[in-house]
Length: 227
Image (tube, rainbow, N blue to C red; front, side, top):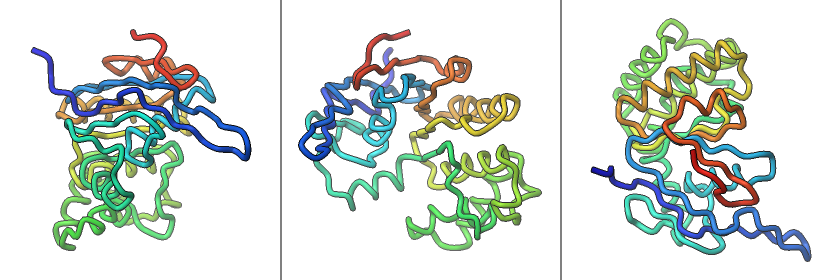
């Protein structure tokens, strides 16, 4: 029996106006992600990967086409509505980690819960549990600048889970890490997937993409080949 679809992009176009020139970043992108899938999206620089991430992650709306999240068309929602969806239902892991250097690991993980009006006691309890899950219980009071790259990425993974999202969107999650640390990060993502999270990962690394159940290839703003 086929699993339910959690995210669907239907003929999605994204057109940027650069002066008098129109740039088609996405050209009729069709993509369907099922619940509990681990999907890797690959493509060369300029293929539309970053724009696709923005669409999947509710960071932007399409120029044409539709984006469905659990069958709800979110392609015409306001920025405030999209922000609420992002905060509750999608966790983000970025190549640059995007941690706040003035905050401790614990505070960085707890921060997204603040924006969802979670009470302070629960924020701290949840953040501690998540840091222990990524094996950083002994580093939770260290600031981001006091952590290695691999540790920072594990903090970022913990932060992405702070509001218990259904979907985790990882944009080049191993891009700034050595191969050994990158493998460790991928094991955490695999564990999350086995625990019921839908993982969507953008990468240029074939070895990293092999961890996924399915690989989709982007070229010129649309899916070219499935594997």
